[in-house]
Image (cartoon, rainbow, N blue to C red):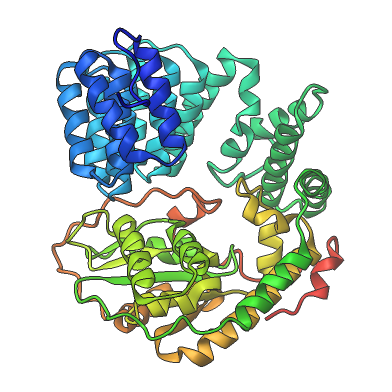
Length: 514
């Protein structure tokens, strides 16, 4: 008898434990065979079905894994664990429409716990499906769910979708329901809903009152300080803005240290990196468009404007190029198959099964680090480099609270200067090496004449003229700090803003203007 098979009459838990142990030891096929037998002994067990489907997925049997889960969910539509596994499987294949449909089906079978709703919302938000996440969250609230966290999530999603009045309503309810709600980034969310006109707005008093609370966590305190600093900036009370923003940045720097030395080493490594080899064949059915630059240099604004063309899709800041880069650099040798697999991985998540969009935008600014890999994987790709006055860029970074640890440099001007300098050195190399594939757009020029600059950029991208009667696509969700600004008419207020701050932030003068 096979030693891995439990004895006759063994309970389900023993079968599951043995299967998990085999899988952890890398014996996937043996574990798969064990779970096949377990499914015969325990046909009504969701744990066995989930385990079997998971092992099929791990063994590369994606179609069978999906079939097992869908068959189970036909009779057990309210099984959250099976649904989440199916959704994750579909997401890994870039089938985000199918993933969202499967998630909706779970909630169509009846109410779920608030924790399950939140897990679904977080997953869909991570997948870039904010509309679907918001619909599930709003439905749970409408059906009587009384968890304040749901209102906080609904508010967060409404911000990304540009529904600013809805955001405030949800945030007000969350704060009325729970004193802990102020710990959920609500002050920052409130500050990002509008441009304040005067200090009589009740948010000013609310932010100040919060800062008097001794029990406020460091994260909530720094977020509230950033919110108040943004509010003072809106009403042009520069000295007060600087005072509170110095406190916010000091608190963040204390809790989120960043290594300038490691950054400089990474830039030197990229400058001296060997070639990835001959480029792959260009695709003929889509064009990757990467908008890169130092963060806060106009990447969100530009992506939002370009995505108004019916054949363009903006995917936000995907993050999958970094995954592809890690896989390539970790390979023992960079063979063509390694590059092809990296290109396929990225394309799956960028295209998302959508065939109508020929130009797909990834606006992760620090994809700038991987321009050489981009043009090896897709020699026909277009790189749009956003450049902005260094002092304005530094000020904008310093005034923001970032949730991504990749931006921990933003709380110190010397660190910001190192990032700007490193990015410019790299872009100088890329522009010299790939001049035909890169176009630089200056922020100041774009905001001064957006229509002319956009027309020139569309011509360079070889976008066809949009049909006169074409319906503009639904605006893409925006999850960056530019969420409010990018939805307003283009304005020039932020060009040269550093000059108003120089008297209070002499650190700005240590940076070059350009």
